[in-house]
Length: 313
Image (tube, rainbow, N blue to C red):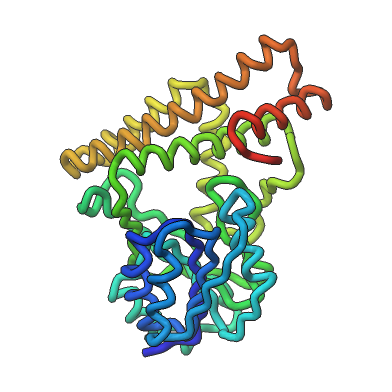
């Protein structure tokens, strides 16, 4: 059953994921828009081979530095005629139960419901990691014209201009096929962006990265509040405590070897790397006798972040 949905996928070198994703979304989407950064692999070629399944547009747009800006550019500049917009990554897909739930509920959705939240399950090293952080609830659908991403470098969420959101019962999957080396390299980039987000929150480097939680989903609002509390804790101790929370208190150990690797990389190694980046900045500021609470210090820090991490604020 084809639903009145435009699915938007942001891509860059996703040839190992894009076919699986399109096999999934083409079954129920009236239109699919792929915003490519652009890729240097076969992502575009593979995507265009699905043009006989549904209307597929592959649009190249230079990556602006974060997912939120790229997605907001798409909804601001591409004409969308469907009632609903679905946002999904190339390494994600909706489970059949969620598709069936959409087919059942979407045609009769009350008008005041302008956003729809899904439960995300992680498939890591081929195994569903059932404990630790599941379920992560994320708003991934909205009525056309009612949603956009809040302007964050990391942990961005869809906000609604008006109306309310509901949470559906079934899951979509985050299921990467990349090897562990590539997975970790990707998280090094994430760590730099997250460290920048924390430094911005601490020193007000720019007003362009919004901390506005207006009309986020309930879990997203709580997650942002929890992160603010987490960021106030001492460096390094907090990453160890977070790993213990996920692995022991939330039962990550029940997921075997895969559960340990997942909790270690995401819950300890990655969070420690964020703290290392922040420590690196603090030492640089001290060495150069800079005060990040002054305008000169903030400007110097923004230049450092751009030159060292390639992130322009």
